[in-house]
Length: 150
Image (tube, rainbow, N blue to C red; front, top):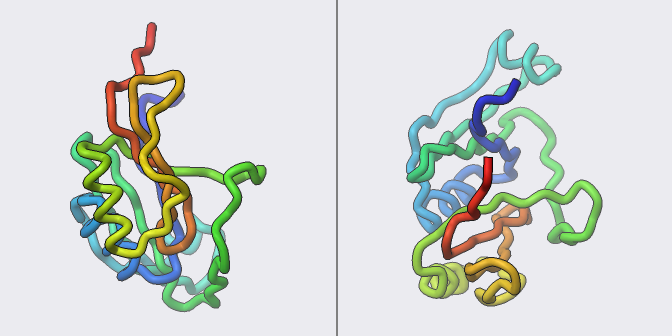
């Protein structure tokens, strides 16, 4: 039974670019930076002789993002953004402060954004989507948290 959400892992093309996006631009804090290898790792992922650079970066609410770049694997780079309506497309969503300034910072860093920050029709939030260096969809939201009745 699930007790809480732990993390999201992303296989990336270039860990330096992903680190810049998630840590320098979005301000996640690195908590671990290491090479993953060996029997445990290879059995876990169902592969043989794989090595990966791994960065674990944490948000202010202690959810972490795991960035994984395989060192000794053929890299198949995504050539264009995934269409949001494509079955299987996923997105990562972060709550942010001062979404307008963050949007300007992303644009200044040449991050591809789908729209500018927009006011939601059904929640008291502003939000927009952008793409990380590997064209994963990232949603940024500023506003009141969702109220959930338990």
